[in-house]
Length: 562
Image 1 (cartoon, helix red, strand yellow):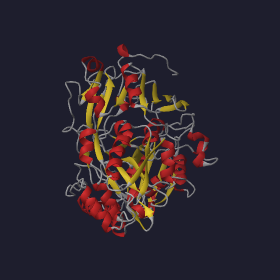
Image 2 (cartoon, helix red, strand yellow; image 1 turned 90 degrees about the vertical axis):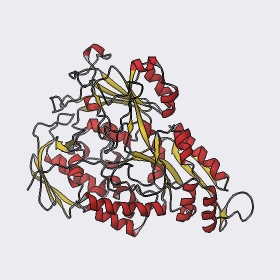
Image 3 (cartoon, rainbow, N blue to C red; image 1 turned 60 degrees about the vertical axis):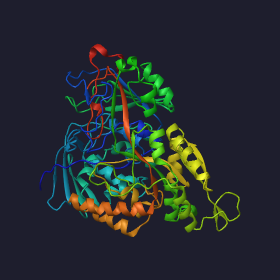
Image 4 (cartoon, rainbow, N blue to C red; image 1 turned 30 degrees about the vertical axis):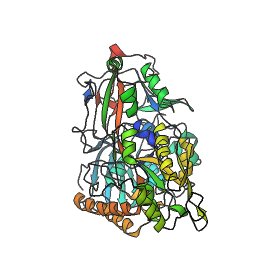
């Protein structure tokens, strides 16, 4: 057996386009070189030379409300954001090096054949109800995840080659795998642990504790006022008492759907941190008063937006049509007019400027004439001369869904709608609340959808693109391609990154040819933080709020349950 260190990755989590400006992360290979200093206030780090102090509250925005909080069944980035405070995992990741480090497990071993993983747990970890966390909870978490009745296809696919979890003793577990997978240390190590004595009874998918989660993380849920806010307070049983313990007495997430309302709250001092739109950066916060109150951080983040075409629909079943739709979206105009240049057009599901990204794929141009030709080749003509294309008696009409919480998404779709109408395609825009949008996507009850993915720097496309995930999983557009499946499967068992990159580049060429998504943009994050908050650094995955603190002399909130 050998102890190893490995670069960490995370699974893809589903995000609405709005979250591309409401959560702060950064691309692995764009750490120092891409930090932007804006008028002397955008810093790569702030207040890190002051000793951290305990106390105060950190108040931030949620631009949409998650359906529930369960680390196994939640699929959206909002839930992941909150769950990260509430639940522990066996391992942690160093925000600077991205290497795996001890957390609940104080050490771990991996067999030479990459088939057996042994984790040795601390004996002083308690859940927020005071119950000890043991190896049986780790096994329960894995077994519940893999239970056929558990609604977690987005997560299960990373564990399909794990045969079983065995309790060796109260504080030792072994995982046995059927075949190697280069992400097993990460997925096993970062799986958030749930307590058997709480979640072992009742309907797991609709468990009452999905609204009252119990974990062993540094915080516990104090209150959840639907549509208003979630309040987290310190977990009194949290095991970590050293410098790695978060500093705030409370973490408050206010549910604010409107961007303008959130910016007003920030200005009034009712929010401590907020990601803003490029338009707001250029037009609404460019004042000396604002700069005196806030620090501004601008950096790339590992996420991209897209329009996904439900390939089960007749109108989207032909790759020529899907490519024509991409050619009818003026992405360069949108980058200039909507993002003010603070976004990059992409052509694949890998992040630009990472080794995995296929930079040889040319940008599909905005070309109405080229699109018309492809549509005609595919048989979509205006046979009855009513101004709308048709084929076999069906009009080219479809509906595209997106979140109702973001004007950026609506602006993009409005531009698209006008250009589609000029070539005889009718597109209706439907704005939904985030939970309703997720429900429609999960049930495959949509024509097209505009959303985004938050992605890791060392990605595995299986979750989103393998055909096995098309009926119940994250491949909700129904992309099925035999060669793509083989490339994805081979990549999972490849421990040579260069060879894996070669496989993934061919995979990207297939996706590029098939156009199951119209890929949109990888935008920059623009994070505004009140200057009273110290300890802010920009890391490979963005900011790391666990290091943030407010010096005693600047603290505003003194009430605490501790």
